[in-house]
Image (tube, rainbow, N blue to C red; front, side, top):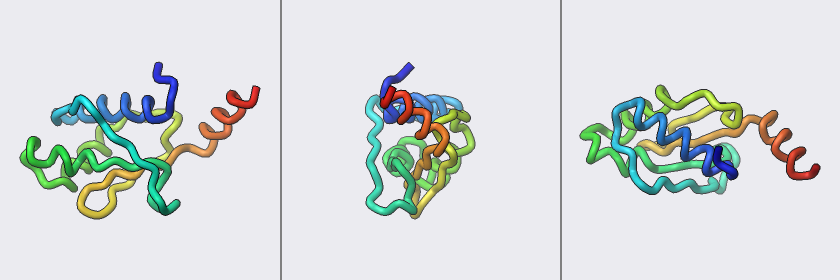
Length: 103
C-alpha cells in the first residue's frame, strides 16, 4: 500500500489506464492546482497519452474517469479544458489522514 497520497493516486491511475486499455507510462506526474476550484491534485496524463492512444486528449481523460477505481481518498474526478484530470479528495478521508498524523 502506498504511503503518500500521490502514491495512492498513481496506483489508482495506473489501474484505470490498464482497465481502459491505454498505455501506462513509467512516470505519472501530479501537481497541486493553484486554484481550489481545480481540485486538490491534477495531472495532464491524458494529453501526454493522446498520440500513443490515437485518441483526442479529452476522450482519453473520459476513459480514465470511467475506469478509475473507487477509492476512499477520492471524492470525485473532473475533466478540465482539453484533457486535464482534476482530483478532489474526500473530506472524510483527509480528516482521518490528519488524525493519523496527529496521533
